[in-house]
Length: 184
Image 1 (cartoon, rainbow, N blue to C red):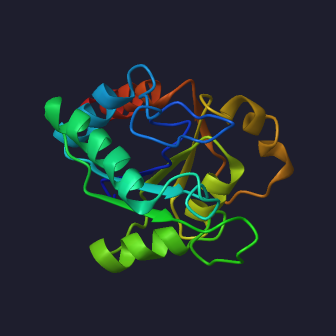
Image 2 (cartoon, one colour):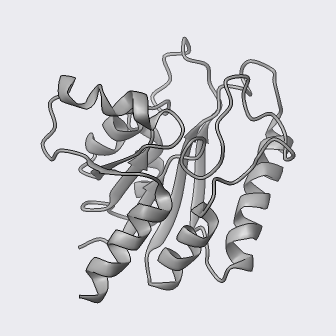
Image 3 (spheres, helix red, strand yellow):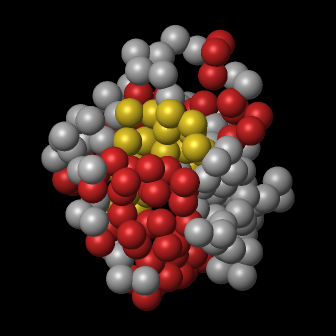
């Protein structure tokens, strides 16, 4: 088993916004998400974040602001005793035909190139494109119902899955289940 988890960001770790998370002040963690990440990390799971960030292409924020958001996320996880192993992002818009924009698996490919095989790892997201990107590289799909997850849940049956997605209320519920399973 690969002890790795790839997380989408907006709607999974932090609150999503229809008008985009544009600044460090806009980046607000979802209840329980930071503690869940820290608990998983302390239990030996390698945590990776793979996120589409088309707000850069749209001019809503720049790379420095995005880095500041990710620094804040990592600092919050570190303050709880955990670690985020890596963060990868796609800065392109939906019309750019970019191989790294989910649902394409380019972000997963970047993580594999940097860290080795992620076969058997989990891909946690709140949208079909998150789950599809992970599934394309053999990651086990996990849908959380935060962010756009409740809408996405109704779309799961329309897709062909080699392994049906697991569904949890939020990242904290997924972490509790995984940690309980690991300790039994």
